[in-house]
Image (cartoon, rainbow, N blue to C red; front, side, top):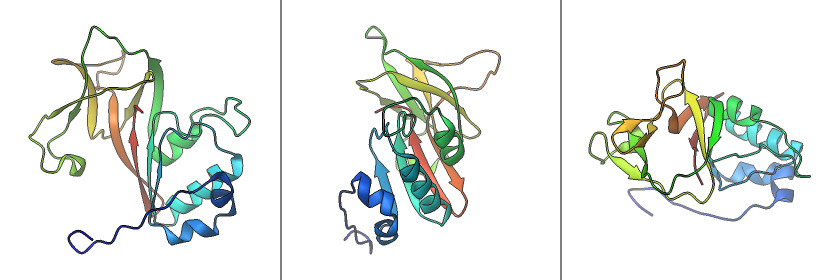
Length: 171
């Protein structure tokens, strides 16, 4: 318990998510690197967030079906509000940073423009978001992709139905 909050946690498997009823006992689901999900799991998670719950997802969540076949970016586009641009390999010669916006609630307590160094084992996802909470940066320069001059989102939050999603472009 911290500041009046009680945190209960548990691990959910594919079958529990597919049944859906167990999701009702959670307020937030965290999906770390959950790349392959069944169509039923995707629908249950969309319904979960749409009903007013929260989702924390990273990297390429639900871009593949349970069989491993490519599904695409639709889940993250819809639930996290991102527009996929490309997968970018990590460059060991450059320090990759997520620059956190000072007015973002995700940056509460951090100095304005705080640079969070990323140590991702996978490629990073370059995506656009209407209002990123953190954007990708190599040292002092933001990462851009023409023709849009906006920096690419490293972390973003989105409202989906009555719920909220936070997405990290790395794992």
